[in-house]
Image 1 (cartoon, chains in turn red, cyan):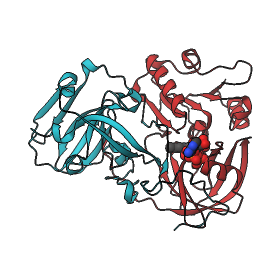
Image 2 (tube, rainbow over the protein chains, first blue to last red):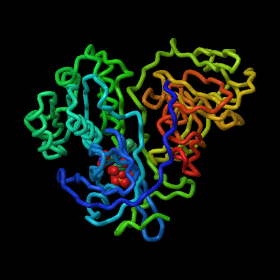
Image 3 (cartoon, chains in turn blue, brown):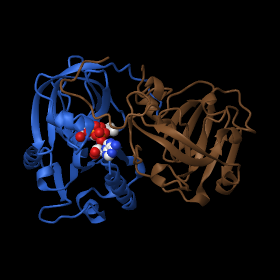
Image 4 (cartoon, each protein chain N blue to C red):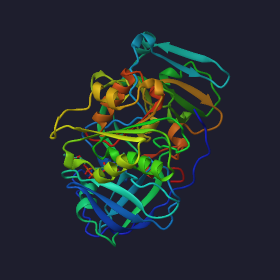
Length: 244
Length: 199
Ligand SMILES: Cc1cc2nc3c(=O)[nH]c(=O)nc-3n(C[C@H](O)[C@H](O)[C@H](O)COP(=O)(O)OP(=O)(O)OC[C@H]3O[C@@H](n4cnc5c(N)ncnc54)[C@H](O)[C@@H]3O)c2cc1C
Protein backbone atom coordinates (compact mmCIF):
# COMPACT_ATOMS: atom_id res chain seq x y z
CA UNK A 1 0.00 0.00 0.00
CA UNK A 2 1.38 3.42 -0.91
CA UNK A 3 2.10 5.61 2.07
CA UNK A 4 1.91 9.18 0.89
CA UNK A 5 2.11 12.57 2.53
CA UNK A 6 -1.12 13.71 4.09
CA UNK A 7 -2.92 16.56 2.38
CA UNK A 8 -3.67 19.68 4.37
CA UNK A 9 -6.63 20.63 6.46
CA UNK A 10 -10.06 21.08 4.89
CA UNK A 11 -11.94 24.14 6.00
CA UNK A 12 -15.54 25.10 5.42
CA UNK A 13 -16.10 28.02 3.12
CA UNK A 14 -19.02 29.82 1.55
CA UNK A 15 -19.61 29.30 -2.16
CA UNK A 16 -22.01 31.38 -4.23
CA UNK A 17 -24.43 29.77 -6.65
CA UNK A 18 -23.85 31.58 -9.95
CA UNK A 19 -26.12 29.49 -12.20
CA UNK A 20 -28.51 26.57 -12.05
CA UNK A 21 -29.25 24.29 -14.98
CA UNK A 22 -31.88 21.58 -15.32
CA UNK A 23 -30.25 18.33 -16.51
CA UNK A 24 -33.38 16.17 -16.37
CA UNK A 25 -36.84 16.67 -14.84
CA UNK A 26 -35.37 15.53 -11.49
CA UNK A 27 -31.71 16.55 -11.58
CA UNK A 28 -30.03 19.91 -11.76
CA UNK A 29 -26.54 21.26 -11.95
CA UNK A 30 -25.43 23.99 -9.57
CA UNK A 31 -22.59 26.20 -10.73
CA UNK A 32 -20.60 27.34 -7.70
CA UNK A 33 -18.15 30.16 -7.36
CA UNK A 34 -15.74 29.13 -4.59
CA UNK A 35 -13.22 31.84 -3.73
CA UNK A 36 -10.51 29.56 -2.27
CA UNK A 37 -10.85 26.43 -4.34
CA UNK A 38 -7.48 24.68 -4.62
CA UNK A 39 -8.48 22.68 -7.71
CA UNK A 40 -9.49 19.04 -7.93
CA UNK A 41 -8.97 15.79 -9.78
CA UNK A 42 -11.81 14.23 -11.77
CA UNK A 43 -13.69 11.85 -9.48
CA UNK A 44 -13.29 13.79 -6.25
CA UNK A 45 -16.25 15.06 -4.26
CA UNK A 46 -17.07 17.87 -1.87
CA UNK A 47 -19.04 17.95 1.36
CA UNK A 48 -21.85 20.41 1.59
CA UNK A 49 -23.50 21.72 4.76
CA UNK A 50 -26.93 23.30 5.09
CA UNK A 51 -27.91 25.16 8.24
CA UNK A 52 -31.44 26.11 9.31
CA UNK A 53 -32.25 29.31 11.22
CA UNK A 54 -32.28 27.48 14.55
CA UNK A 55 -28.84 26.00 13.97
CA UNK A 56 -29.94 22.54 12.82
CA UNK A 57 -27.63 21.40 10.05
CA UNK A 58 -27.29 18.56 7.56
CA UNK A 59 -24.25 17.47 5.56
CA UNK A 60 -24.04 15.39 2.40
CA UNK A 61 -21.38 14.52 -0.18
CA UNK A 62 -21.65 15.49 -3.86
CA UNK A 63 -19.30 14.51 -6.63
CA UNK A 64 -17.76 17.23 -8.72
CA UNK A 65 -19.12 17.24 -12.26
CA UNK A 66 -16.78 19.78 -13.82
CA UNK A 67 -13.16 19.36 -14.75
CA UNK A 68 -10.63 21.79 -13.31
CA UNK A 69 -9.18 24.01 -15.98
CA UNK A 70 -7.10 25.86 -13.39
CA UNK A 71 -9.69 28.48 -12.57
CA UNK A 72 -13.38 28.97 -12.96
CA UNK A 73 -16.46 27.61 -11.29
CA UNK A 74 -17.05 24.17 -9.84
CA UNK A 75 -20.19 22.29 -10.81
CA UNK A 76 -22.16 19.61 -8.99
CA UNK A 77 -25.22 17.74 -10.26
CA UNK A 78 -27.85 16.70 -7.76
CA UNK A 79 -30.54 14.09 -8.28
CA UNK A 80 -33.75 14.80 -6.37
CA UNK A 81 -34.81 11.89 -4.16
CA UNK A 82 -38.47 11.72 -3.22
CA UNK A 83 -38.53 12.97 0.35
CA UNK A 84 -34.75 13.54 0.43
CA UNK A 85 -33.77 16.18 2.95
CA UNK A 86 -30.81 17.80 1.20
CA UNK A 87 -31.30 16.81 -2.45
CA UNK A 88 -34.82 18.27 -2.58
CA UNK A 89 -33.51 21.55 -1.17
CA UNK A 90 -30.69 21.69 -3.72
CA UNK A 91 -32.94 20.79 -6.65
CA UNK A 92 -36.06 22.82 -5.71
CA UNK A 93 -35.14 25.72 -3.43
CA UNK A 94 -31.64 26.97 -4.18
CA UNK A 95 -31.45 30.00 -6.46
CA UNK A 96 -28.74 32.00 -8.16
CA UNK A 97 -27.11 34.26 -5.57
CA UNK A 98 -27.60 31.91 -2.63
CA UNK A 99 -24.58 31.00 -0.56
CA UNK A 100 -23.80 27.41 0.38
CA UNK A 101 -21.16 26.10 2.76
CA UNK A 102 -18.84 23.41 1.51
CA UNK A 103 -15.40 21.97 1.80
CA UNK A 104 -13.20 19.89 -0.42
CA UNK A 105 -11.99 18.45 -2.64
CA UNK A 106 -12.18 15.05 -0.95
CA UNK A 107 -11.12 11.59 -2.06
CA UNK A 108 -7.87 10.43 -3.60
CA UNK A 109 -8.85 6.94 -4.72
CA UNK A 110 -11.81 7.22 -7.09
CA UNK A 111 -9.91 9.60 -9.36
CA UNK A 112 -8.68 9.52 -12.92
CA UNK A 113 -5.34 11.14 -13.66
CA UNK A 114 -4.89 12.15 -17.27
CA UNK A 115 -1.29 10.88 -17.22
CA UNK A 116 -2.55 7.29 -16.84
CA UNK A 117 -2.21 5.70 -20.29
CA UNK A 118 -4.63 2.76 -19.87
CA UNK A 119 -7.98 2.63 -21.68
CA UNK A 120 -10.85 3.55 -19.38
CA UNK A 121 -14.20 1.90 -18.77
CA UNK A 122 -16.80 3.99 -16.96
CA UNK A 123 -20.02 2.40 -15.72
CA UNK A 124 -22.69 4.69 -14.26
CA UNK A 125 -26.03 4.06 -12.64
CA UNK A 126 -28.27 7.16 -12.37
CA UNK A 127 -26.51 10.10 -10.70
CA UNK A 128 -23.37 7.94 -10.54
CA UNK A 129 -22.52 9.49 -13.88
CA UNK A 130 -21.46 12.74 -12.16
CA UNK A 131 -17.84 11.94 -11.23
CA UNK A 132 -17.44 9.98 -14.49
CA UNK A 133 -18.51 13.06 -16.47
CA UNK A 134 -15.75 14.99 -14.75
CA UNK A 135 -13.31 12.38 -16.10
CA UNK A 136 -14.77 12.62 -19.63
CA UNK A 137 -14.57 16.42 -19.52
CA UNK A 138 -11.01 16.36 -18.25
CA UNK A 139 -9.93 13.96 -20.95
CA UNK A 140 -11.52 16.31 -23.49
CA UNK A 141 -9.78 19.32 -22.00
CA UNK A 142 -6.30 17.80 -22.09
CA UNK A 143 -7.05 16.01 -25.40
CA UNK A 144 -6.24 12.69 -23.78
CA UNK A 145 -5.76 9.82 -26.20
CA UNK A 146 -6.81 7.05 -23.81
CA UNK A 147 -9.87 5.38 -25.36
CA UNK A 148 -12.90 5.89 -23.10
CA UNK A 149 -16.11 3.91 -22.93
CA UNK A 150 -19.12 4.82 -20.83
CA UNK A 151 -21.99 2.45 -20.06
CA UNK A 152 -24.74 4.56 -18.55
CA UNK A 153 -27.82 3.00 -16.98
CA UNK A 154 -30.91 5.17 -16.44
CA UNK A 155 -34.60 4.42 -16.02
CA UNK A 156 -35.81 6.21 -19.15
CA UNK A 157 -34.07 8.22 -21.87
CA UNK A 158 -35.34 11.43 -20.21
CA UNK A 159 -33.39 10.57 -17.04
CA UNK A 160 -29.97 10.80 -18.70
CA UNK A 161 -27.89 13.72 -17.46
CA UNK A 162 -25.65 15.61 -19.89
CA UNK A 163 -27.38 13.87 -22.82
CA UNK A 164 -26.70 16.59 -25.41
CA UNK A 165 -23.12 17.12 -24.34
CA UNK A 166 -22.42 13.38 -24.45
CA UNK A 167 -23.95 13.16 -27.92
CA UNK A 168 -21.80 16.05 -29.14
CA UNK A 169 -18.64 14.63 -27.57
CA UNK A 170 -19.22 11.20 -29.10
CA UNK A 171 -19.79 12.80 -32.52
CA UNK A 172 -16.60 14.86 -32.34
CA UNK A 173 -14.32 12.37 -30.65
CA UNK A 174 -13.62 8.91 -32.06
CA UNK A 175 -11.94 7.92 -28.78
CA UNK A 176 -15.18 8.12 -26.80
CA UNK A 177 -18.07 5.63 -26.88
CA UNK A 178 -21.28 5.87 -24.89
CA UNK A 179 -23.83 3.10 -24.51
CA UNK A 180 -27.13 3.66 -22.72
CA UNK A 181 -29.05 1.03 -20.80
CA UNK A 182 -32.69 1.92 -20.13
CA UNK A 183 -34.20 -0.06 -17.29
CA UNK A 184 -37.85 1.04 -17.46
CA UNK A 185 -38.70 2.61 -20.79
CA UNK A 186 -37.11 2.96 -24.20
CA UNK A 187 -36.54 0.77 -27.24
CA UNK A 188 -35.29 -2.24 -25.22
CA UNK A 189 -35.84 -1.91 -21.48
CA UNK A 190 -33.51 -4.15 -19.43
CA UNK A 191 -31.06 -4.13 -16.59
CA UNK A 192 -27.32 -4.11 -17.07
CA UNK A 193 -26.04 -7.67 -17.43
CA UNK A 194 -22.98 -9.70 -18.39
CA UNK A 195 -23.70 -9.34 -22.10
CA UNK A 196 -23.91 -5.54 -21.83
CA UNK A 197 -20.63 -5.21 -19.97
CA UNK A 198 -18.96 -7.74 -22.29
CA UNK A 199 -20.20 -6.03 -25.45
CA UNK A 200 -19.78 -2.37 -24.54
CA UNK A 201 -16.87 -2.55 -22.09
CA UNK A 202 -13.22 -3.35 -22.77
CA UNK A 203 -11.98 -6.94 -22.73
CA UNK A 204 -10.02 -7.74 -19.55
CA UNK A 205 -6.78 -8.29 -21.49
CA UNK A 206 -6.79 -4.58 -22.42
CA UNK A 207 -6.28 -4.04 -18.67
CA UNK A 208 -8.50 -0.96 -18.56
CA UNK A 209 -8.86 1.32 -15.57
CA UNK A 210 -12.46 0.77 -14.49
CA UNK A 211 -14.62 3.21 -12.54
CA UNK A 212 -18.08 2.13 -11.39
CA UNK A 213 -20.41 4.58 -9.64
CA UNK A 214 -24.06 4.57 -8.65
CA UNK A 215 -26.47 3.21 -6.08
CA UNK A 216 -25.12 0.42 -3.90
CA UNK A 217 -26.95 -2.48 -5.55
CA UNK A 218 -25.96 -1.31 -9.01
CA UNK A 219 -22.28 -1.05 -8.10
CA UNK A 220 -22.31 -4.48 -6.46
CA UNK A 221 -23.87 -6.07 -9.54
CA UNK A 222 -21.51 -4.42 -12.02
CA UNK A 223 -18.37 -5.08 -9.97
CA UNK A 224 -19.33 -8.76 -9.65
CA UNK A 225 -19.88 -8.98 -13.43
CA UNK A 226 -16.50 -7.36 -14.13
CA UNK A 227 -14.67 -9.77 -11.83
CA UNK A 228 -16.53 -12.73 -13.37
CA UNK A 229 -15.48 -11.54 -16.84
CA UNK A 230 -11.86 -11.67 -15.72
CA UNK A 231 -11.04 -8.07 -14.85
CA UNK A 232 -8.40 -7.64 -12.17
CA UNK A 233 -10.21 -6.50 -8.99
CA UNK A 234 -7.32 -4.14 -8.32
CA UNK A 235 -8.15 -2.20 -11.50
CA UNK A 236 -11.80 -1.73 -10.54
CA UNK A 237 -12.56 1.35 -8.48
CA UNK A 238 -16.01 1.81 -7.07
CA UNK A 239 -18.00 4.59 -5.49
CA UNK A 240 -21.32 3.81 -3.86
CA UNK A 241 -23.80 6.65 -3.47
CA UNK A 242 -26.01 4.76 -1.01
CA UNK A 243 -29.63 3.79 -1.56
CA UNK A 244 -30.87 0.63 -3.22
CA UNK B 1 -22.53 27.90 13.49
CA UNK B 2 -22.32 28.14 9.74
CA UNK B 3 -24.09 30.51 7.40
CA UNK B 4 -27.87 30.09 7.30
CA UNK B 5 -29.21 28.42 4.17
CA UNK B 6 -32.17 30.47 2.96
CA UNK B 7 -35.37 28.44 3.12
CA UNK B 8 -33.78 25.35 4.63
CA UNK B 9 -35.80 23.91 7.48
CA UNK B 10 -34.57 20.36 7.34
CA UNK B 11 -36.74 17.30 7.74
CA UNK B 12 -35.08 16.08 10.96
CA UNK B 13 -37.51 13.19 11.02
CA UNK B 14 -34.93 10.91 12.52
CA UNK B 15 -33.34 12.87 15.29
CA UNK B 16 -32.10 10.66 18.09
CA UNK B 17 -30.24 11.63 21.26
CA UNK B 18 -27.47 9.11 20.63
CA UNK B 19 -26.66 10.37 17.15
CA UNK B 20 -23.21 12.01 16.79
CA UNK B 21 -23.19 15.50 15.24
CA UNK B 22 -23.60 15.64 11.47
CA UNK B 23 -24.99 12.09 11.27
CA UNK B 24 -28.43 10.99 10.11
CA UNK B 25 -30.23 7.75 10.84
CA UNK B 26 -30.57 5.02 8.27
CA UNK B 27 -32.60 1.88 8.51
CA UNK B 28 -31.05 -0.08 5.66
CA UNK B 29 -27.39 -1.06 5.65
CA UNK B 30 -25.38 0.97 3.13
CA UNK B 31 -22.26 -0.57 1.60
CA UNK B 32 -19.06 1.38 1.06
CA UNK B 33 -15.87 -0.14 -0.30
CA UNK B 34 -13.14 0.95 -2.66
CA UNK B 35 -13.55 -1.92 -5.10
CA UNK B 36 -15.43 -5.13 -5.86
CA UNK B 37 -16.56 -7.39 -3.03
CA UNK B 38 -14.12 -10.29 -2.55
CA UNK B 39 -15.60 -13.77 -1.94
CA UNK B 40 -13.39 -15.64 0.48
CA UNK B 41 -13.91 -19.41 0.91
CA UNK B 42 -13.83 -20.39 4.58
CA UNK B 43 -11.21 -23.10 3.97
CA UNK B 44 -8.84 -20.42 2.65
CA UNK B 45 -9.56 -17.87 5.37
CA UNK B 46 -6.95 -17.04 7.98
CA UNK B 47 -6.24 -14.24 10.41
CA UNK B 48 -2.80 -13.25 11.67
CA UNK B 49 -1.53 -10.88 14.33
CA UNK B 50 2.12 -9.97 13.64
CA UNK B 51 4.15 -8.25 16.30
CA UNK B 52 6.89 -5.67 15.88
CA UNK B 53 9.53 -8.39 16.38
CA UNK B 54 8.02 -10.57 13.67
CA UNK B 55 6.15 -13.05 15.84
CA UNK B 56 3.00 -14.35 14.18
CA UNK B 57 -0.21 -15.66 15.71
CA UNK B 58 -2.45 -17.23 13.09
CA UNK B 59 -5.92 -18.76 13.25
CA UNK B 60 -7.76 -20.62 10.51
CA UNK B 61 -11.56 -20.54 10.34
CA UNK B 62 -12.08 -23.61 12.55
CA UNK B 63 -9.62 -22.37 15.17
CA UNK B 64 -11.05 -18.87 15.05
CA UNK B 65 -14.70 -19.88 15.44
CA UNK B 66 -13.74 -22.26 18.26
CA UNK B 67 -12.57 -19.26 20.32
CA UNK B 68 -14.98 -17.86 22.91
CA UNK B 69 -17.33 -15.49 21.11
CA UNK B 70 -19.57 -12.67 22.28
CA UNK B 71 -22.86 -11.23 21.10
CA UNK B 72 -23.10 -7.48 21.32
CA UNK B 73 -25.37 -4.65 20.21
CA UNK B 74 -23.77 -1.39 19.11
CA UNK B 75 -24.41 1.81 17.17
CA UNK B 76 -22.30 2.30 14.05
CA UNK B 77 -21.38 5.59 12.36
CA UNK B 78 -20.11 6.02 8.80
CA UNK B 79 -18.06 9.03 7.75
CA UNK B 80 -20.47 9.44 4.81
CA UNK B 81 -22.95 10.64 7.46
CA UNK B 82 -25.23 7.68 8.09
CA UNK B 83 -25.58 6.03 11.45
CA UNK B 84 -27.31 2.80 12.27
CA UNK B 85 -28.38 2.26 15.86
CA UNK B 86 -28.64 -0.99 17.79
CA UNK B 87 -26.94 -3.36 15.34
CA UNK B 88 -26.38 -6.87 16.70
CA UNK B 89 -23.23 -8.85 16.00
CA UNK B 90 -21.38 -11.95 17.06
CA UNK B 91 -17.62 -12.16 17.10
CA UNK B 92 -14.40 -12.67 18.97
CA UNK B 93 -13.20 -9.91 21.25
CA UNK B 94 -9.76 -8.50 20.45
CA UNK B 95 -8.97 -9.05 24.13
CA UNK B 96 -9.26 -12.79 23.48
CA UNK B 97 -7.06 -12.61 20.39
CA UNK B 98 -4.38 -10.55 22.14
CA UNK B 99 -4.23 -12.82 25.22
CA UNK B 100 -1.00 -14.52 24.16
CA UNK B 101 0.42 -11.69 22.05
CA UNK B 102 3.46 -9.96 23.51
CA UNK B 103 3.91 -6.46 22.20
CA UNK B 104 5.31 -3.13 23.27
CA UNK B 105 4.02 -1.28 20.21
CA UNK B 106 1.19 1.22 20.54
CA UNK B 107 -0.26 1.22 17.02
CA UNK B 108 -1.88 -1.33 14.77
CA UNK B 109 -2.33 -1.49 11.02
CA UNK B 110 -5.30 -3.63 10.04
CA UNK B 111 -4.91 -5.42 6.70
CA UNK B 112 -7.65 -6.79 4.49
CA UNK B 113 -7.96 -9.07 1.51
CA UNK B 114 -7.49 -6.85 -1.54
CA UNK B 115 -4.91 -4.57 0.06
CA UNK B 116 -7.09 -2.25 2.16
CA UNK B 117 -5.44 -0.97 5.35
CA UNK B 118 -6.44 1.21 8.27
CA UNK B 119 -4.53 2.33 11.37
CA UNK B 120 -5.76 2.21 14.98
CA UNK B 121 -4.12 2.83 18.36
CA UNK B 122 -3.85 -0.51 20.17
CA UNK B 123 -5.69 0.81 23.21
CA UNK B 124 -8.75 1.38 21.01
CA UNK B 125 -8.88 -2.33 20.27
CA UNK B 126 -8.64 -3.61 23.84
CA UNK B 127 -10.81 -3.58 26.99
CA UNK B 128 -13.99 -4.70 25.30
CA UNK B 129 -13.92 -2.01 22.62
CA UNK B 130 -13.42 -4.10 19.46
CA UNK B 131 -14.15 -7.45 17.87
CA UNK B 132 -13.57 -9.55 14.79
CA UNK B 133 -17.23 -10.06 13.89
CA UNK B 134 -18.55 -12.93 11.79
CA UNK B 135 -22.31 -12.74 12.29
CA UNK B 136 -24.73 -9.86 11.79
CA UNK B 137 -28.33 -10.11 13.01
CA UNK B 138 -27.93 -13.84 13.67
CA UNK B 139 -26.73 -14.67 10.14
CA UNK B 140 -23.23 -15.22 8.75
CA UNK B 141 -21.85 -11.86 7.70
CA UNK B 142 -22.58 -11.09 4.00
CA UNK B 143 -19.53 -10.66 1.75
CA UNK B 144 -20.64 -7.11 0.88
CA UNK B 145 -20.52 -6.20 4.57
CA UNK B 146 -17.09 -7.74 5.02
CA UNK B 147 -17.86 -11.45 5.44
CA UNK B 148 -16.60 -13.96 6.41
CA UNK B 149 -15.21 -11.63 9.10
CA UNK B 150 -14.57 -7.95 9.66
CA UNK B 151 -13.03 -5.79 12.29
CA UNK B 152 -15.62 -3.93 14.35
CA UNK B 153 -14.64 -0.83 16.31
CA UNK B 154 -18.01 0.82 16.93
CA UNK B 155 -16.65 3.89 18.73
CA UNK B 156 -14.74 5.04 15.62
CA UNK B 157 -16.01 5.92 12.14
CA UNK B 158 -16.84 2.77 10.25
CA UNK B 159 -13.95 2.94 7.76
CA UNK B 160 -11.78 1.83 10.69
CA UNK B 161 -13.84 -1.38 10.93
CA UNK B 162 -11.93 -3.04 8.10
CA UNK B 163 -13.99 -5.50 6.03
CA UNK B 164 -12.47 -8.85 4.97
CA UNK B 165 -9.83 -8.32 7.63
CA UNK B 166 -7.02 -10.88 7.53
CA UNK B 167 -4.37 -9.44 9.76
CA UNK B 168 -3.21 -6.93 12.34
CA UNK B 169 0.33 -5.61 12.22
CA UNK B 170 1.84 -3.98 15.31
CA UNK B 171 3.68 -0.69 14.70
CA UNK B 172 5.76 1.53 16.97
CA UNK B 173 4.60 4.64 15.15
CA UNK B 174 1.23 5.63 13.81
CA UNK B 175 1.11 5.45 10.03
CA UNK B 176 -1.77 6.29 7.70
CA UNK B 177 -3.75 3.46 6.10
CA UNK B 178 -5.70 3.58 2.85
CA UNK B 179 -8.24 6.36 3.46
CA UNK B 180 -6.02 8.13 5.98
CA UNK B 181 -3.37 8.59 3.29
CA UNK B 182 -6.14 10.01 1.08
CA UNK B 183 -6.91 12.75 3.59
CA UNK B 184 -9.16 11.09 6.13
CA UNK B 185 -8.53 11.63 9.83
CA UNK B 186 -5.86 9.51 11.52
CA UNK B 187 -8.17 8.65 14.45
CA UNK B 188 -11.81 9.13 13.37
CA UNK B 189 -13.91 9.87 16.47
CA UNK B 190 -17.52 10.43 15.31
CA UNK B 191 -18.40 12.46 18.42
CA UNK B 192 -15.70 15.04 17.62
CA UNK B 193 -16.47 14.79 13.87
CA UNK B 194 -12.92 13.76 12.99
CA UNK B 195 -13.73 13.11 9.35
CA UNK B 196 -10.74 14.54 7.55
CA UNK B 197 -7.16 15.42 8.33
CA UNK B 198 -7.10 18.45 10.63
CA UNK B 199 -10.69 18.13 11.93
C1 LIG C 1 -19.00 10.13 -2.24
C2 LIG C 1 -20.45 10.44 -2.57
C3 LIG C 1 -20.73 11.20 -3.69
C4 LIG C 1 -22.06 11.49 -4.01
N1 LIG C 1 -22.30 12.23 -5.14
C5 LIG C 1 -23.59 12.52 -5.49
C6 LIG C 1 -23.86 13.27 -6.68
O1 LIG C 1 -22.97 13.67 -7.42
N2 LIG C 1 -25.16 13.54 -6.97
C7 LIG C 1 -26.19 13.11 -6.17
O2 LIG C 1 -27.35 13.41 -6.48
N3 LIG C 1 -25.95 12.38 -5.04
C8 LIG C 1 -24.67 12.09 -4.67
N4 LIG C 1 -24.43 11.36 -3.52
C9 LIG C 1 -25.55 11.04 -2.63
C10 LIG C 1 -25.81 12.24 -1.70
O3 LIG C 1 -24.74 12.40 -0.81
C11 LIG C 1 -27.07 12.09 -0.83
O4 LIG C 1 -27.04 10.86 -0.17
C12 LIG C 1 -28.35 12.19 -1.64
O5 LIG C 1 -28.44 13.46 -2.27
C13 LIG C 1 -29.58 11.97 -0.73
O6 LIG C 1 -29.58 12.92 0.31
P1 LIG C 1 -30.96 13.53 0.81
O7 LIG C 1 -30.63 14.38 1.99
O8 LIG C 1 -31.71 14.16 -0.29
O9 LIG C 1 -31.76 12.25 1.22
P2 LIG C 1 -32.01 11.71 2.68
O10 LIG C 1 -32.93 12.63 3.41
O11 LIG C 1 -30.73 11.39 3.30
O12 LIG C 1 -32.79 10.40 2.30
C14 LIG C 1 -32.23 9.41 1.42
C15 LIG C 1 -33.35 8.47 1.01
O13 LIG C 1 -33.77 7.75 2.11
C16 LIG C 1 -35.13 7.95 2.33
N5 LIG C 1 -35.31 8.13 3.79
C17 LIG C 1 -34.50 8.80 4.62
N6 LIG C 1 -34.96 8.73 5.88
C18 LIG C 1 -36.08 7.98 5.85
C19 LIG C 1 -37.00 7.54 6.81
N7 LIG C 1 -36.90 7.84 8.09
N8 LIG C 1 -38.03 6.77 6.41
C20 LIG C 1 -38.17 6.46 5.12
N9 LIG C 1 -37.32 6.83 4.15
C21 LIG C 1 -36.29 7.59 4.51
C22 LIG C 1 -35.51 9.20 1.60
O14 LIG C 1 -36.86 9.17 1.16
C23 LIG C 1 -34.58 9.18 0.44
O15 LIG C 1 -35.11 8.41 -0.61
C24 LIG C 1 -23.11 11.04 -3.19
C25 LIG C 1 -22.82 10.26 -2.05
C26 LIG C 1 -21.50 9.96 -1.74
C27 LIG C 1 -21.22 9.12 -0.52
